[in-house]
View 1 (cartoon, rainbow, N blue to C red):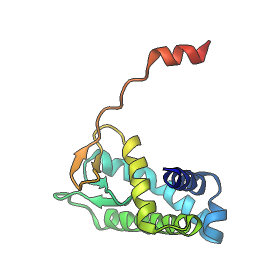
View 2: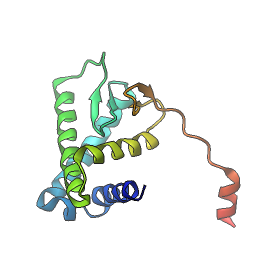
View 3: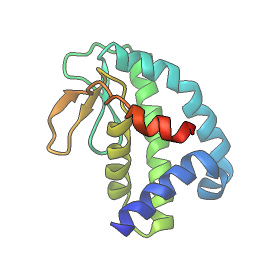
View 4: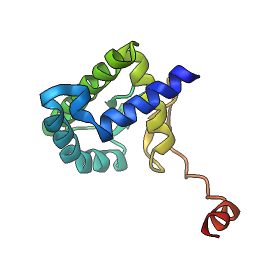
Length: 143
């Protein structure tokens, strides 16, 4: 469990807080490219054309008809994700696959309602509506 937490925190830190530390000189470019691709990726997810697989990568859905540009966009995103996962795996002394699996769990837990996500058993489902926040907890925080 500690290893899972450590890897999860490392992914978060590397991806959001200190990417240049984890990836070297290319980190700024990777971060910029991923940010630029995000709106188009979100559009493809909302359309049901792509989903997040259990390995932490984007995947075209079975009946999706993607343009060549969309396919290249997905390939580029997945290549950058692999670079990130490789850096984290090296830092945490684990495998790229394990980092991807952990990242997939994080992605599933934060997926937008209706986005396709692949469960650990390989089954594709649409992400459910997020559970409502506990209002009592929120009230206590405000006091």
